Length: 340
Image 1 (tube, one colour):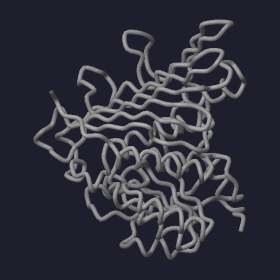
Image 2 (cartoon, helix red, strand yellow; image 1 turned 180 degrees about the horizontal axis):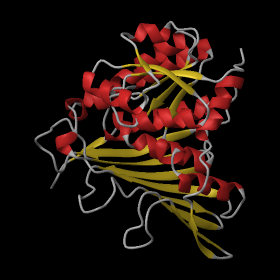
Image 3 (spheres, helix red, strand yellow; image 1 turned 90 degrees about the horizontal axis):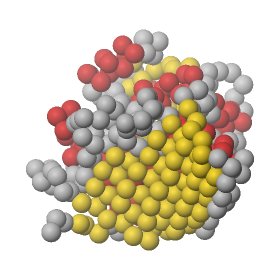
């Protein structure tokens, strides 16, 4: 059934700060935040202060059984995200969740089964593309044919770790899923999107804990190689970004085409231009810099449209699940590296 009134949504579980960008994405697209649920008092108080229009409910059940709610949004502890999403779909609602949307292949298989059965939307926000204006512009440039056919991507996701500010679950692999299952899901999404691959496999993957032996379940480095039906990809992620960098990470993406290439410096251009959202284009006509700070982000509006009209303009369900599948398989089959 199509929704004609403003889209009403709820929030359940707010353990990661990405919940705020997810909520703002739907609010900016015309959604109405109705209520929220959180077990943690401190997290609930902070959230309520940011969104005083939202009523705090006492249980998840109140949200799931409210027929006026179309979408549930979550950024819970990673291992809890898929089980919640499955319950959401079983109650006839759509689901928007922070990455990683899954921590095990078993969770993914069950989500696929329930999604197929219910026809609901299970949307994972791969924010390093969907909330990046430079990444959005790269897609537009590729579509216009400026670098020919894309044949390969190289995605880098370095992060600051901020050990003292991390909750206990951050250091437990069963809770967070592993570095490739978590951070690298961004790069899997980008590899599929820019190459146009609809089938892909992990050729090689590795993880390590080089720096933090006091947290034996933490992985602070990961890399993998991908082979798709329309291109190849390399991924490197880590928790080594030094405190001297004035942002949380120097995320970069290089997209290689048969007629040129694009580099996105999403959050900072070290020793270069100020701010973020930088794109560099090189092809047979020119070398060009593009400031992408004013490029519109279409994900929120497209997702709301999809929820209302049962379409797939924001992201296909197959793409969403395949990006997560690649990350989970890379994690499951990773070689464990050690220092020599």
